[in-house]
Length: 247
Image (tube, rainbow, N blue to C red; front, side, top):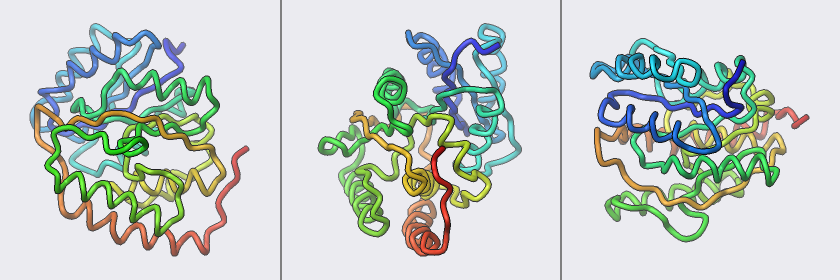
């Protein structure tokens, strides 16, 4: 029997500095969230920390261990499938490094559960630019990347690469998750674009994004390169794709 109807999927790779604090913070929230950590064989012992925490939270904290770094997108897909198979209604994705404020989980949940959104996005660019501790160059790249995606695809979302989201399970059931091909930031774009093409209601909830204070960023030039070309391929592919309609 589920303790909560809400599952937060958190991919990890070398997050020993953050994972315990994140788990305890999420479990302190009033709305009630379960957590699934998807760990890609972190050599720093992240999974061992989670296993120790499971002794304190046996019915709320879950661990899916995978061998080696397989990509952010595949980690989320595995987490989504796990959440669906365990009958969660609202499934979230967020980072482990506190760049996403766990307190905002409740705001994303309210946007779906109370206001009727199918997908709620924690948006850095819904009301201006709300990013803290990033170099200006990185802010500009991220901001204009979202503008580029919106221009190419027509997706009516300001923060197209956002990785802080709440999905109603119906979205993840409708999308063929095995057909989602991108693994990096383009995964975030592809999921939003596909949900939109299926006719789901996407809402942006303004948040403040704060760069990590502990651990190291997983950002790379290859991720941006994938997003650049992935968006063009995504748009071309959409011309020949019949998307399933929401139930």
